[in-house]
Every structure is written in C-alpha cells, then in structure tokens.
Amino acid sequence: MGSPLEHVDVVIVGSGSAALCAGIAARAAGAETLMVEAAPWEMAGGNSRYTAGAMRFAYDDVDDLRPLLANPDDPRIATADFGSYTTDQFSIDLHGFNEGRDLSVEQRALIDESLPTMQWLAEMGVRFEPIWERQSFVQDGRHVFWGGLTLAAAGEGPGLVDAELAVYEELGGRIRYLSPVVDLVVADDDGRVVGVELAGGERISASSVVLACGGFEANRDLRVEHLGDEWAHAKVRGTPYNIGTGLRLAWAQGAARHGVYENCHATPMDRDMADFGNLDLPHLERKHYRKICYFLGVMVNADGDRFVDEGANFRNYTYAQFGRAVLEQPGHVAWQFFDAKVADLLYGEYRFHDASFIEADTLEALVASIDGIDQAATLATLVEFNAAVDDSVPFDPTVLDGRGAPGLNPPRSNWAQRLDTPPFRAYPVTGGITFTYGGLRVDEAGAVQRGDGSVVDGLFACGELVGGVFFGGYPGGSGLTSGAVFGRRAGAGAAAFAS
Image (tube, rainbow, N blue to C red; front, side):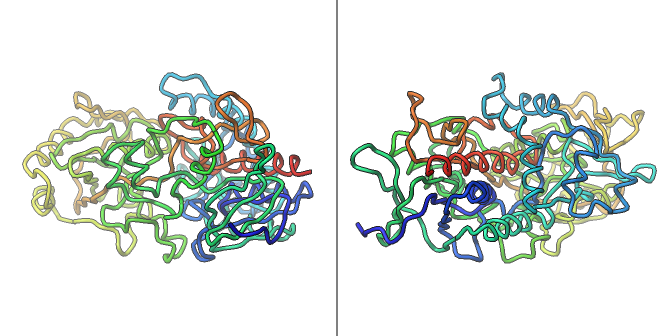
C-alpha cells in the first residue's frame, strides 16, 4: 500500500451535484477540500450532468421564485401562472409513492430544507429558470405551470454541474479526475476513516471523507441481484461510473443498508438508444432518449395489450414507475402511438433527428409495418380505445381533466383522445434506469450510521447513497433537490468533524 502524499480536511468522492454541494458547504465552512472523480474530465459530473436540471421544492408564490432566477426580468414571468407548491403538497406527493409507509426522516428533511437549499444555491451564484417548454402550457395567453415543478438550472443538468463546479473552485476547492477510489483508509487504533486509497496504491490522508459517487445502476450484476433478472436488459440513462463503489466501501465499515434496494427510478426510453447516456450530444439533445409523452397517446406491449393507465396522473408522477413497467413487458419493449392532433404537444425528444419511430397515414398501415408485435391484437386494442374515449369532457393538458376512456382495463383516467388524425406514429421504447433507491442511513450531519445507530467516525454520504428518500416512486425533480439538501448537510458535517 502506498504512503500518503498529501493531507486535506475533507475528501469528497464523486463530482455530481450532491458532491459539489458538499464541497461548496465544506469550503464555506473553512475546510480544505479535495474532490476525487473516477471519470475523465469530459465525463465527470455523475448522473447530474445527464439530467434536465429540474428541481422540485416547496414555495408559496412567485415571490419565492424571483430571487432564484437567472433572469428575473424575463417578460414572460409577468404573464405566467406559477401557482404554489406548499410543504403540505410536497408531503402528499412523496407519501403517495411510499406504498403505505409514513414519511421517513429523510423525506421530511427533503421537504423542509428544499426551499432553503435552493435559496442557498442562488446566494452562492447558482441560478435557475422556469421550465417553459416541459412544465407549462399556454392557455388564454398565459403560461400555466402544472405538476408542482417550475424551475430548472440554467443550462439544464450540464449547466447545474458547471455552475456548482465554478462556485466550488472559486471558493478554493480542488478536484482530480481519473482518480477512482478503491478503498477507505482506516485508523488502526479507533477505526476512524482517515483517507482514501486510489487505484494504483496512492493514498490521500483526510480528516473526513464524503461518499457522493452514486448508486449501483450501472452495475449489471447488482441490478440483477437487487432488482431482478429483467434489469440485466435495462438501458442506463446516465454515467457508466455509478457501479456501487460508495456502497461497497461503506458496507465494509459496518454501514447499515437503508431504504428499498429492490426499487429504482426508471423511465421509458428510446429502444434504440446506446446502453449508456451519451455526453457527446449537445446538452439540449442529451435528454432526447427519454420518451415520456405517453399520456398524450396509447402505450401497447408486444402482445398488443395496454399495460398502464397512461393518464393516471401528470407524467411527473408516473414516468419513474412506467420505465419499470415497460421493462417488465415481453421482450422488455413497448410502443407509444400518437396521431397528428398532439404533434405540437409532444416534447422535443420526439422530434430529434435520430428518434426511432414508424409513420403511416392509417392505423392499419402503421400497425402492419411494426415487426415484433402482435399486429391483430394491437389494432384491436387501438380500435377499442378509440371507441371508448369520452368526448363529452374537454381536453385540457394543464389539469387532470378527467377525459377518460370508460370500460377499459387498464383504465384511462385523463387526456384520452381518439387516434383519428393522420399521420400516425409509433415509437418503440424500453426501460432506462436512472438511479437506485437503496442506500445508507445517515444522521442529521450526513454521517454514515451502522445498524445499531452508531456512526462510522469520519465517514459521510450524500446523493444517491442516502437511503430512505424514495420507496415506490418519485415525483419528478426530487432527485436533484435531494442531492443538494443532503450534499449541503454532508459537506457541513464533514467540515465540522474535520475541525
């Protein structure tokens, strides 16, 4: 084993938003910090760089939003209806995914600290912008926001990472790339974590270590072990570097497993995407592999059957579950059908140059051109859907409009419209995993805990490594907010321990 070459107060493992928030908080507290990232510079930033940068947080009205904005003078703001998203509504939304569980300690922290953490980031120089395209519809000349999600980082996920990295480095924080951690250094006398060992044997001495290197979504074997055999076939939406390293290192120190290891955030994705996210694309195109406008059409599996209520709720509240639902279908695929009536409402991901789809002027011709699907059953399903649509209820994508298709199984609750306007399109999708829910238990300072409630001295964790935040699902935008909340906690806690 190599000898220590340097000593710092806090070593942070990882370089995504949670890691950067930890670094900013630690530097703001006066700690000397070094961030070590396994990826090269061009692939750094963890899963955060692959996101659309949306952050869910509680707010009362537009006055809570203005101080967070990169451009508070945008003329559209005067004609926008942002509504409110109270802590009570955030609580209801999270609880709705808990599968009967009460709100966890971690969820209450996420809710209560969401706005203060956004305000802290803005004060540090990280600014946000309204999600005009994906979270609002123009109605009577006003931008009406829906689903409780209103702001994203300027420049989306890459913009968030770049802005946080700039703040971290301006505060004097350092970062090293191509520096994968393979082990923790532990004091012989009392078991304190006192540094990290890098690949090649180099050791960095530290007074505390923050693990912020993601879950195990990019580790095929761990996916199969904890999520099930079908997850061997999942596309990975983000970085190939989240392979469970932080979990392995913490478990070796007696850390408790916490949360739901058998569940994860997953999303319907273009069937023909690469196995991992593609950072070579411009950031505005990087999210194009997602296909999450199923609520405007009909989604059918290879047997020709619908398998979810596409309009059960706003897509913010369903897409993380529907990715899993698609992956569990025969062949791990499904097809999303749309007609021309909704073409202008489909997100840009459906119009990118390499989006996979088939187009025809009739439903019969469209279905007949799809390989690998029960064509007769599929056409029958689409005809049955068309016949069931309740035209007496107006279509309104800004609310849960109640425009259903009675008598179907599964039911269709909202936004049902007949497929009757050519041209028609079918988009093949599969399941793409975003992040895993199982993680570690941490205390209020972000310190990693053992099963008996004691802490592993000198070891802290944040980001995807914090268990107990999500259980059966996820309201969109909560993940990045969770990373910021627990990253800030862990950085401050690690700095306090180091001092």
